[in-house]
Length: 620
Ligand code: PG9
Image (cartoon, rainbow, N blue to C red; front, side, top):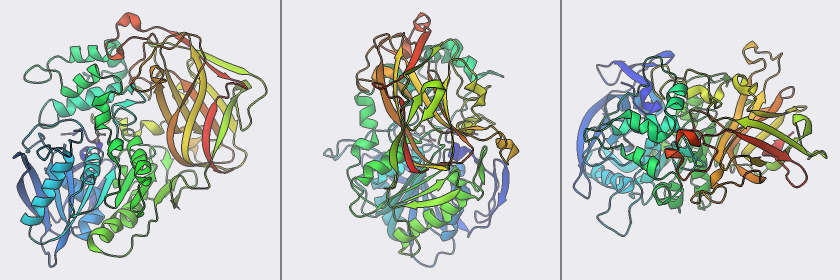
């Protein structure tokens, strides 16, 4: 059965026997690996409030000396799939010999208690209060006493939800926790991770993920219907409230799924989301922390970048490390030499796992030499080279504005001619975010994992997309954060802006598959009702020009000579994001069909409105 986690669902054990010799199949390549034999045990671990959590423990069968424990906590089932992920996703760690522990979190699979999506941190002054951090603490305390042969040190690792749980283990950590690796952790599901980005609701993901995980203790497959394209499915229903109504009873009691309820009742960044925002609680680097993220992570790209940069402010002891690469969600566990159309030239996941991940845990859990990362490792696309930086972004990265000039040209100087570009954004005909048909997120054969590297030519001819270009004369290296800074107006009283930075390959590229290819390097949405603050939705004044400035996240890419830089702006990105009615309504989740109106969106660029992208230029 496919689980909601891309990570967990990619590996299937097709033949077992001795746990030391697993034969595994990954999407696309068959792998047989030999591992030292491990013995499997199950444990029931009491938490401070009496709730018992279930865990699986794998111990190397021929263990001669005390070993550290490597722990993952998960909502996706600590059973076979997750155990296989230890062998398949982290073979270097499996071979290096750790006592591996995988625990079902509260309310999931075989653990007792209630599951709460992204459980907020509890009040630390209340000794009875529980959260994911106290559960990790209690689990470690129990393991130290009850698992013979451990060396008294624990590392915590996980991707995505388990990445968030790894980060939680490092907040008020048990003293035995000596290293954590939050990988693609969601840090704030409203600001930039799974459920909203800058206030725009991730309709397909919010719908699919909550249904997949909250309709029962185990994962549920989500269907839209036979041959139903998600674009039509969500367009026909309209608002999210209508999606929920049409889904019917999702729980035995008939209650609405708890996370759907949160979406419906808390569309803005109120206390419900603020308390779940991990960034507000990161006040110390309590243990060495190796954060890993993908430049093409379709789920949690924001989390790792935000986590690293907040921790960096508290990193007096240089224990905050970052690895970024052109990976989709969790794909550093694969040995692939490419992601969709992007060729890396080498299996960069394997290199990362061997040279950084395995040596990080060996250093902090076993005192072995070899971990030589000063601060950040990043795989730079375009040059296809690993880079190491003393800080991210590196000191030599200079924020430089690339202006939107007249004639749909980009320029390093603001043009002398004022310019305006307009399009009609129609919520009844929204711009698709990827090629259709759009399958349920985790359905078999879904293209969810690769959409961010899709060739954008499928939308560039649309009339509701504005484009500016610049031919690249010399190789242009960008390393750091890209910021959109646009001056826009709309005839509506609400609206969304979507900005993409694209590397267009030349028509005569040496690789025939890449000729004319339009590869996004950065992209993001902003819901303009939140221009005064994420907790203060307000109507826009029709026709008024306002500045919309927001982050398009980090990049490490060389735009090669002969390529073209493109900036694209549009106002819908469907059904990844719900449609903005473009008429201000108090709660978009509950908008009526009549609220969705066409609007004319204008992007202005002149002396007093210098629209452009602020780029982290390293060299050109
Ligand atoms: N991206 C998934 C997720 C994390 C947290 C909340 C909701 C979804 C995951 O793969 O775990």
